[in-house]
Length: 178
Image (cartoon, rainbow, N blue to C red; front, side, top):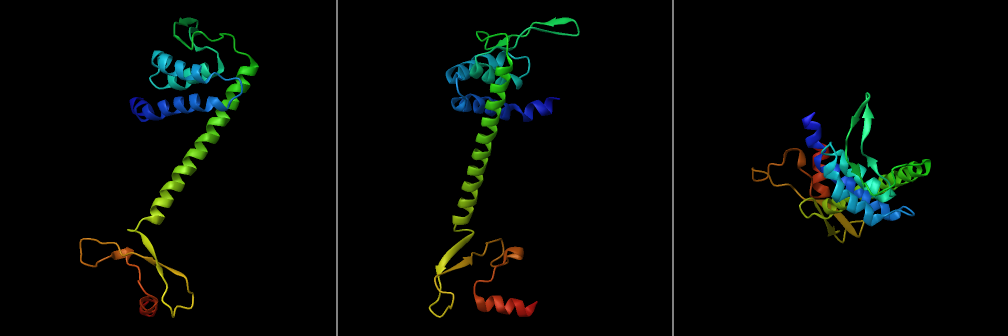
């Protein structure tokens, strides 16, 4: 009920924006119409969240969605999303809507992978996590050496599960102890 509506409040608006923005990649779509319908009509929908996607899709495709309809023999006088659009949808409109849906899904994957990459990159480059040091001249591996940082906790050097050995000698000592 209300909890679902609350949790979907922000995602519904972001999805409407995504549909409108991605309509630029759909042949013969009306990008400006998608944004106009989104901001003009989304709030008219009886659902606080559903109007955002319907309005953006209607504007992008140049059709009208929602509007008055019958449920159980009773007329529901709902407002149109993109009232100036065509009222009679065709099979071609459904195909175009599915293409726009696929474009949005692909864009979302790209966005999420990009965000994941940025997060991973920021963690990898964080000096609080690790650092690269020049290997000692007698180190046979040569080049750079990965040295994890010790995480500071409340104790002076009490590190619990995050206690990493700092040298190969310390690693060997820890192996022998276990």
